[in-house]
Length: 181
Image (cartoon, rainbow, N blue to C red; front, side, top):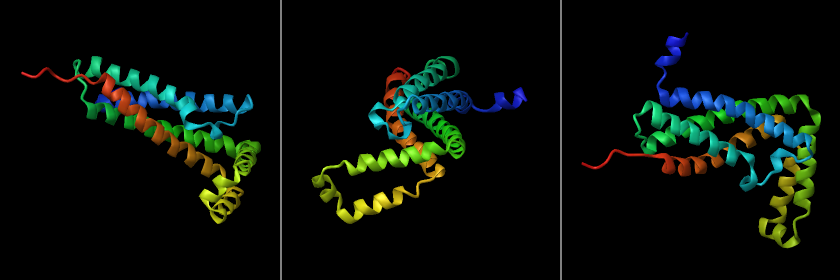
């Protein structure tokens, strides 16, 4: 079995290893947020713990690849590819765990719908007019039919977006190219 694992290119193998760890850790952090009274699906993306989590894990992934597998050289595309694999696998693992959790904890989806409905209803009339009254009413109506799968998809999509921006920054910081000759 270890021979099979060793035949996987380091760019994929290292990213997968860290993604599994981060996916489980990210899910645990999400559960902690939920049980301390802060619904994790309503956190503003700028303050989302995934920004720091992705930054730390991508740093270690790219550093390991650069220093131990690529002889001190890491091109931007390699950093983006490794980070992309990490983010997608993280998103799949965490989203599946969120889906399982929200299927088994009834209050998770219900509380999300209630909190988001209250948040949307607190918008000032000017904002509602900018959005459009009909569109705003449609959004409120659709919100009531939110499912566990919808929350898992939302978490996955937001993770991809956050991960893309973090991966650009970390890939630029850790890239090291051969000197021009």
